[in-house]
Amino acid sequence: MKKFWKILLIVLAVLAVGVAVYFIWFHDNKKYYQPEILIPEVYHDIEFDTDLLIGVWKEDELYYRYNEDGTAVTWDLADDVMEDEGTALTWTLEHNLFTHNYIMEIGGIIPKLFNMKVLELDVMEYDDDFGVNHRFSKVDEMLIQ
Image (tube, rainbow, N blue to C red; front, side, top):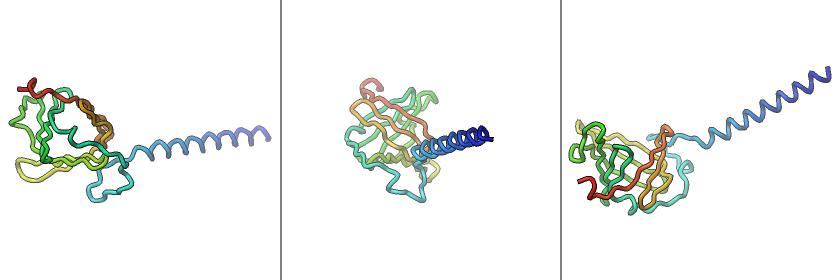
């Protein structure tokens, strides 16, 4: 009978540790896209220099050109879409909250929020609202013309 209580105590201890690990793990993996509710405490107090964002960025065949006035365009060479045929958007970067507002040709705006991780002279990295990591490198504009 004593052995039964020891085994039960060990099982309960392992279960308690498993529940604690589960809640700690999913507490750090919050989704950032909630257009009707933006909770300020979700976003960290990290500041990025928006001047570093200006220019052309590439991830595989996907390109973004960010302009100083908060506008941008994106195109994908894998789909045979060139810059002049690309999708227009506006962007903002506040703390680590990076927002794209895609301007649709048929009307309407589609917002997309990202969690900026790294913004340096030649590297930009952020996560989207599905937890997918995107890593871009800055492109010399002479190479894409």
